[in-house]
Amino acid sequence: MNNPEQRKLKARAYKSEIKPVWCPGCGHFGVLSAVTKALAYLGLRKEKVALVSGIGCSSRLPAYIDVYGFHGVHGRALPIASGLKAARPDLTVIAAGGDGDGFSIGGNHFLHACRRNMDMTYIVMDNQVYGMTKGQASPTTDPDWVKSKLTPHGTGIPQFNPPAIALASGAGFIARGFSGDPIGLTRLLVEAITYPGFAFIQVLSPCTTFRPEQKAWKHQVHSQVLETTDDPLDAARRIHGNDGVTTGLLYRIEKPVMQPRTTTGTVAELRSEFLV
Ligand code: SF4
Ligand code: MG
Image (tube, rainbow, N blue to C red):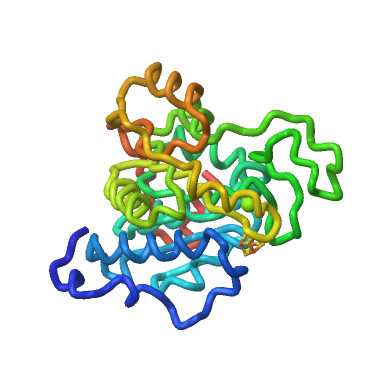
């Protein structure tokens, strides 16, 4: 994975020429910066990295990074990334998106990607709102958030706890980062990308337009004081016991990586296999 030649590339060399259209102050700028720093640190060749996304503000990320990119359809970053990894195991595959994209329409894919454990990184930029479609409640929105016209009395539904769901679904690498902590987030991304298996990172990434109160995260988010754990019971206690704004590597174990057998057959040969 590491390539001494590529270590000469600075993080900015991984940025594309396309200027982000995110709102001023959007947390996703910090994620963009951290991803490029992680790629530069690892010295990854651009043509050996593929970044796959779904739909939403955060899913614009592939346009802004100068590696292979696929801006997919809503909630489908993970199946696309899985297919790509199956066909091209030599690539470093990163899937990225938001909380609405990944935990609502993409929720089923999230569960199964966790248990399938293909070697890829999944970054969810969580701002607890659908930003692109102008501020509806998402699966991670707190139940009493009343600023959306669609849910003026709040959803009344407890929000998803993404790390807990990842743990219950069998993920072997679970982390939480913060877009306002680029160094800490870069470190987590480096660990995630080099982890052999499915690495999930929930990134607290404020939506300054529809959740301006999230600007306070810069005063509230803090890193965990404990080392990571490989004990799922310990991880569950920590995840359920913490305040949702504690960052760090929450859980890490080694487990068998799934790499599907692929075929190099022609379409005609494939068809004949199905007809047997
Ligand atoms: Fe960022 Fe929110 Fe603006 Fe989308 S709407 S670009 S998430 S600040
Ligand atoms: Mg969102």
